[in-house]
Amino acid sequence: MKVKLILHGILRDYLPREAKGKTTLDLPDGATIEAVVRQLKIKQNVSAAVTGVEVENNHILQEGEELHLFRFIAGG
Image 1 (cartoon, rainbow, N blue to C red):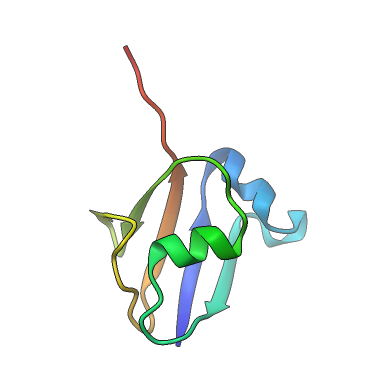
Image 2: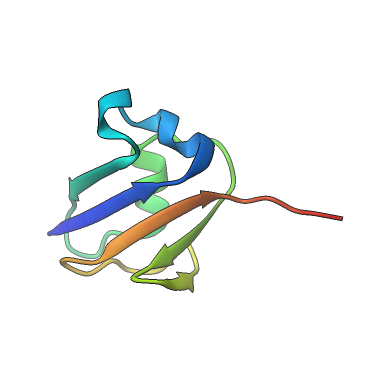
């Protein structure tokens, strides 16, 4: 299945510079956001949104979805 991936902020560095933080992934059925994070070897904590809705990292992705990954930050 194909999923559009958009990385925000410093996470853009996990893709080639010319990709400008955007790519399309070809994933096996049943792939989760956690699997995408592992595939990209992202070591930072991330938050995710799929088609504009914040979701947990165990969310199972569906064909054609748009996945946004953000660096998880905390304030105080």
